[in-house]
Length: 171
Ligand SMILES: CC(C)(COP(=O)(O)OP(=O)(O)OC[C@H]1O[C@@H](n2cnc3c(N)ncnc32)[C@H](O)[C@@H]1OP(=O)(O)O)[C@@H](O)C(=O)NCCC(=O)NCCS
Image (cartoon, rainbow, N blue to C red; front, side):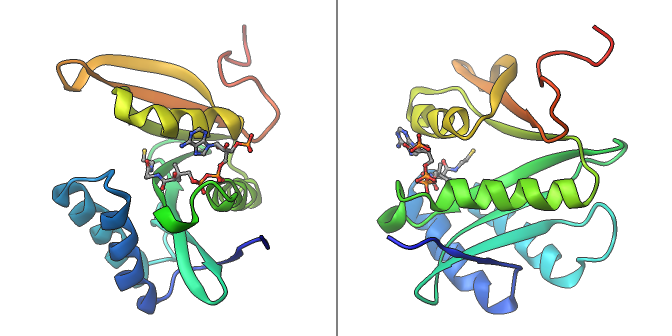
C-alpha cells in the first residue's frame, strides 16, 4: 500500500472527518461534537499561536484520517494532540503513524519541544495505547478514576528535542 498524502485542513474535510469519527466507534456523540467544534475553529482561525492545527491524510484522493493539535497555552513549546482518528477501513496500514510523524515535523518547525497525548486507561483503549507506544510515545502520567471510576486518564509524551520525556532537564 502506498503512503498517504498529508495536507492541511480544508472546509470540505468536515463531512468526511465527521463520518470517520462516528465510524471508529471510539467516540461518544458528545466527543464527536467537541472534535467537530475544533474543526470549525481550525477553519476560521489558523493564524494565532495557539490555534487548533490539523493534518489530514488522503489515500487515492479520499480523506482517511486526521490529527488535530496545538500549542498548549502558557507553555513555551508543549503541544497537545487533541484528536487523532483513522477510517476503520484503512487502520493498521501506517496512516496513524504518518499523521503523528507529520504533527512532529510541524511541532519541530514551530520550535516545540514536547508532544502530549491524553487518552483513556480502560481496556477498550488498549489498542490506542499500543499505537502510541509503537510510535515512540511514553506514558508519563496517569490520573486514576479520571473519566469515571475505573477509567484513568493516561498521558503519553514524546520529546522532539531528543530529551527523555520522563525526566526533567535538571535531573
Ligand atoms: C489509533 C489510530 C489513530 C491508529 O491509526 P492506524 O492507522 O490504525 O495506526 P498505524 O497503522 O499507523 O499503526 C502504527 C503502529 O501501531 C500499531 N497498532 C495500530 N493499531 C493497533 C492495534 N489495534 N493493536 C495493536 N497495535 C496497533 C501498529 O501495529 C503499528 O506498529 P508498527 O509501527 O510497529 O508496525 C486508529 O486505530 C484509530 O483511529 N482508532 C480509533 C480512534 C482512537 O482511538 N483515537 C485516539 C483517541 S485518544
